[in-house]
Picture 1 (tube, rainbow, N blue to C red):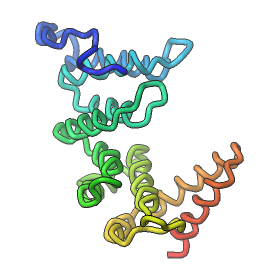
Picture 2: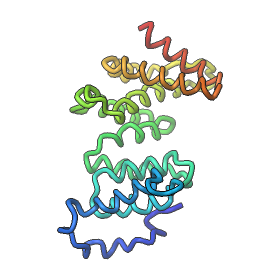
Picture 3: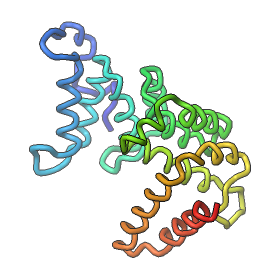
Length: 216
């Protein structure tokens, strides 16, 4: 697992970098991180080195690197997950005005601090520019509204075997109303993808949720 403590980057000397050599001082580190993460120019994806460079970009001041670091620590199969570090970086991303961090951070709180989860989801759905971004087919926003929808269904009462929404999330569901068409489209694509892998149990869950949206 890579983090600030065992990173090879000398963060104490970052200020000595010539900041006039590139548009933003973090651009080079973040560009290299993207190449590692997606395997651009390589025969394989290297998420550990990607994380190293994203952390460097964060310390150089990147406003988008905290979100990417948080996602890696949250659910990357190639790096040991660490929810505490994911929470830390999502919070840092919010401090740098990256509203993409609100949703994954909220989902990490869903089982431990439901009030905070609701607050973060609400802040995201009420934030400026969401509808504009969706109008311009912003993939991150489409994923985030769908993530919120799935999360409020995943949060079930103890001993409940039904795929139902907790009443605490009804206000959040109402805030999702303007985005239903995007969520329906996202779930439809998920079902098509799952059909290729023949995951019948998950297909049934998604079809039930799709039916819940359509009948509304």
